[in-house]
Image (cartoon, rainbow, N blue to C red; front, top):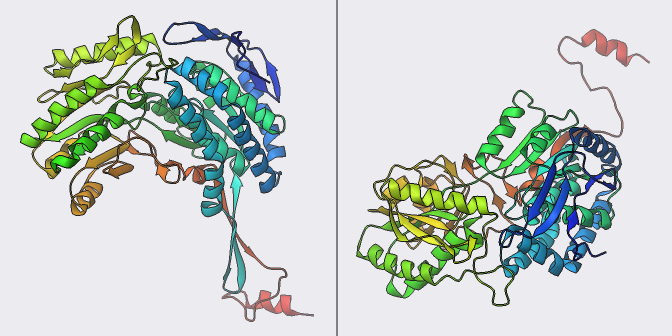
Length: 505
């Protein structure tokens, strides 16, 4: 079935394996560049959210009893379907979210690879283990949590929800999925592919809606856990909603105001430094939580020279229509309101005393396609708030210790990179910087799925995803086991008479 037909996609919830129209408020999704309609219809009503969780509870009873090999087979079927639908999905992601097609194809391929990586993670981190302890069989098993709510972001509308969904389903959980209201069409496509992969009815349930639908879903009594990727503000609201309910797991993957620190390097390496900065700061139009927001450069002649080269490189970045034949590096931000807010942020910084080195500005005739910008914020007191766009702040450090001090001048702690320096410098950087992803001579973006991904402070709640996602979708069950039961050789203290009675033939 081709879900990317020439007609506009209509909103459908999926509850108990059936597609139904929503009964809630009217919503729509448009291409951010030309604002053509891509998806429309009604969001889920509260009654439909209720029904989705009841369905998920019923689905859990079935799915948790399916063998692990059976669950793996369905997940691999899903990966095959992703591959078959790769081109259509990439075009839809590009149209709805605004990233270039080349990058959307990369996202689909990453989502495909996520299945096998999740299986490897389960095998290495959550596999049943057996041992002998004091003459008994000691077994550790892992059981699914139950019904999990997955709240997806718009910047990777296929891959990032899958980073929660795939390990959760492999562990035996059932899912209620609410995609971002900015990318409902991709979320609906994703859900349909899981149905086609062979999931029993009720295991995967789809609801559409804005924040109010998500807020209501978080209050559901059938809920066992929330898996969230998005902003700190929303993550904190989820955390508050579940305060006093320690039995419900919350995994929060939030944003970052990520530092990229540069130390002096030989002339021959400056080009590589500049290229890594551009990749870190501007890829996906700066709409990755791991993008470098703050570039901390050496306060020296080397730093001044590097800045000059970086200005030229930033001005040379290609921007353009996401689906054009000559693919740009940067496409559009997610919608017009985001572009307007980003321009307002840049203006506010300049009014606070920052100096624009390369002004971020819209491509002529396309208000959501933004040319990347650099802004020197030396001496400015700016809010510690994440911005999500192709605008990087410049700061200056006198040495590595000063750079680490600047890097840590935020409540966020997701990603950080050191470019240049020695192995000892990097060890100092790793020990000193507050971040969950710390790279050396690599960009801040492009994290490996075979490593944990998560941050500290306002960037997360110590539930790293990627390879460690298997840890928060199941719980360990410890067992001491024996095939038979016999009396001990001697009575325990105070149980001598009990032992005598039990020993009588």
